[in-house]
Image 1 (tube, rainbow, N blue to C red):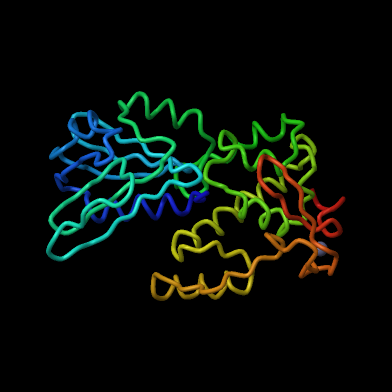
Image 2: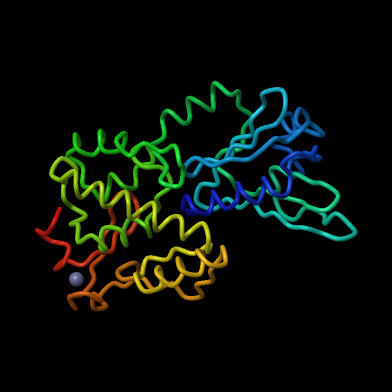
Length: 276
Ligand SMILES: [Zn+2]
């Protein structure tokens, strides 16, 4: 499943390609045909992301709401002469003379009113990638919950945009036991997790990769600071998908089990009875 940084990159790509234009909007597959007809040729103002939700604002207070779910893809391509024909089940297509964006397999592709968008956002936790995010909203949920912190982090109502990879690596970076109940996590630990998440996900947006290794992070941040971009070819991960391999910090074997519907990976030695 795409994590939040991917959706923020997608929002920027759609904004750059279509913001301020009147794209042709269609539904080659047919399932979004009626709504597409309402949007077709109207003014596309801007695109924005909130966690894993993508909102594309058109004129007449019409907002396109997309959630890619596990397998959805929204690909933005520029083309030279001929508009490429849709391939596969394209739910939604945006097209100008130079750019086409095809949406396939989303779990949500719907037309919303601004009020409905506000309702979706109100149900969603703070998004570390948004300047207007309020981490205390997440803390309110976490410190009242007996659910494991590893589970809470996957709940989009608690924090928006984190996926499994960020969850596993973030907890490892802070030596937090993923099984620790939310109400046993200290507020200073939550503050540190949030601050780090903002840092990690910003590098994620800039590079398009999930970079969690400290040396790679620092290198990427230095490149971003000087050139505005960075390339990380092979992000190293400490525990994610490293079952039975030695923890890079303490050497204990990395373990895995399902938590929150996804495979959790953690170090049973340095993520136990520590700072959390
Ligand atoms: Zn360890």
